[in-house]
Amino acid sequence: MYLAVALAVVVTMGLALIRALLGPTVYDRVLAVNMMGTKTVLLLSVITFAIGRPDFLDLALAYALINFIGVLAVLEFFRKRSELDPENNTREAE
Amino acid sequence: MNLIFGIFLLTLMLITGIAVVRAKNLFVATTLMGIFSLLLAANFFLLDAADVALTEAAVGAGISTVLFLSALSLTAEQEKPCYGGRLVALGVVVITTLALLHATLDSPRVGDINAPVHQHVAPWYIEQTPILIDVPNIVTAILASFRGYDTLGEVFVVFTAGIGVMFLLAHYPHKKPHKPHQGLRHYLIQRLVGRTVIPFILLFGFYVQFHGDFGPGGGFQAGALIAAAIILYALIEGTDTALTVIPSWLLTGMVSGGALLYSGVGIAGMLMGGNFLDYSVLASDPVAGQHLGILLIELGVGITVTGVLLSIFFAFASRKHF
Image (cartoon, rainbow over all chains, first blue to last red; front, side):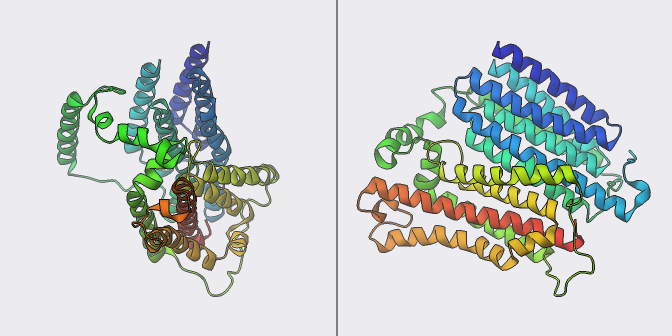
């Protein structure tokens, strides 16, 4: 049962990674990173119970708390960038 | 089961790593580095290295993304095109890869009981930790007591790195800037969620700091978590407000004070008749002395790491009001 859940989470991680690689806009990538963080929290929680060491749940807790900061930093980065250069705030050239 | 997940996560890491190198847009590379760090931490966790995974969680997921983005806001978003020298680079990479692959053929299997690492000092550590130090987390016992010299060296490395970054980047404006940095104060959802989360991150940081003898964690991880909470505060309320809460003289004091506390515990051991960093003499009972010594040096590590990470963040942020 744990195995099935962990497999499903891992497959979702793969899908999120594909979205992060393909883009095409900044929002896709930010959402993909955020989703990747959530999936990591889930994967760690499932594995802690699967290997029978729920005290390692601390790690998942650390991720759940910290994950928010990266997203806020991205928001702040684009807010600053759009103030400096209103034209080019969400477009990205590759 | 662990093997399959390990291979899958390593494959994802390989793909992400190649994508980071290939990305011409530095913002894309930064976001992909965030994913890389998450996958790395999951891998550490699968290999049962909970303390390392917690460090990677605290530093990789939160702080390094913030630092990368603040560095990026001081420079251009696109990578400069680079011509020539590619064949040499490819040659070096191929030769290194082949050498590493050749070396892995000799390395023992994961968890092999006959591996040299499990034959040398590890059995002694496992036998002696309950007798000499009596803490459940053997990693903490090794890190803080048996190999206290190495950890002292690490703290000085962190200290030196912080000083180096402050020399390069820090400049403290003498007069107030025209427009104080507002942060994300006017964004309701971000402010509410952030304000709710900050106390919990701080609480969790102190838990990791003082519970490191019993579970995964210790000074390094706790320092990164507490620094992350204050960086979150700075992002929400603006750098200027955060610098009034934690003034720069306090940060400088923390950077040097933690390292000083660590070495002070070592010298106190010498003065009380033991060797440098021998905690057994700190209290009447050797085991109680070890507990006291580990608590104090972990505190020193935590203070220095918090101070250095925050100094680096403010050094970046006060340059161009990231």
